[in-house]
Image 1 (cartoon, rainbow, N blue to C red):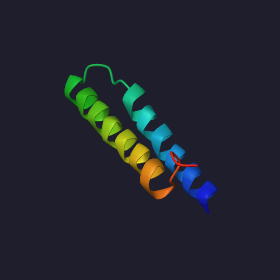
Image 2: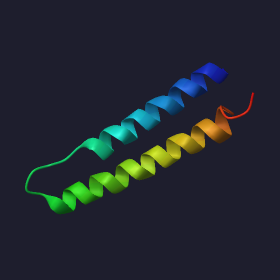
Image 3: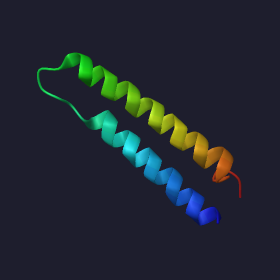
Image 4: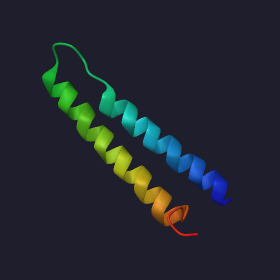
Length: 58
C-alpha cells in the first residue's frame, strides 16, 4: 500500500510540474494562474508524500 501511495504522490507532483512549465502566448494572466495552480498542486503532492505515504521516514 505504501508503494501505491508513493506513486500517487509522484503523479500529483508531475502534474503540478506540468502546470508550472506550461506557458500560453499572449495571455499573461492565464500564465500566472497556471503557475499558481502548479505551485499549489506540487505542494499538495509533497504533503501527500510526506504525511500520507510516509515517504520521508524509513
